[in-house]
Length: 259
Image (cartoon, rainbow, N blue to C red; front, side, top):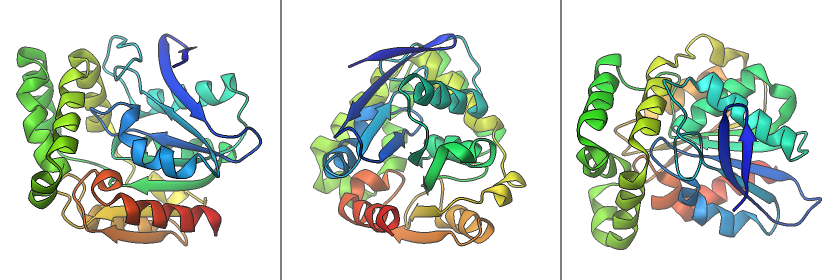
């Protein structure tokens, strides 16, 4: 897969689909690489050019010294779009990727056609909780947090029904660079868009997971109520709704993009 230099970072990405079709960008959750979007890439690359990438410190993108900020992660996206000659795109981000989408929606709306904000919030967690996670990862590595993360990402029923998917996901988290993960934890910790979110004026879809402990439906409803004319969908899933409820997720996203 190609790797592009974005400022001080090297960003790994994949661009699939027929040239000349609209571009749909997928942006990852904290602790995930671009493969978390496999269920969407298979579905959407027939109609769109699908662009997936690993944020700095994740997957095969370089783990530059942190801490990072959401603004920095969003500007990496703009550098990637510029390098690929992509003027305007649809953007779908989940969790940390949704925060990146919010920043772009406020600060670079001319680059976005439609915006999907999934399992995310204007502010996630507390500084104390993020600092504890950063400390745990720096001291004991990714395995010290991976199983707890997976428990928050999937419902107990899904973990029982799809053990291979859950195991692969846990392996993905464990393989994430600990320094890159900690640097992105700081980016999520410091992000607060409670005031700015009202300035998003793009067609927006908000997706929540009914059983999501990390970004509960109240976070999604807050977004949908403050972004003018936003659509809201609540899926029978926990945090990684694009995996746990992939058919409904894909249907909601396709209906929104094609409307």
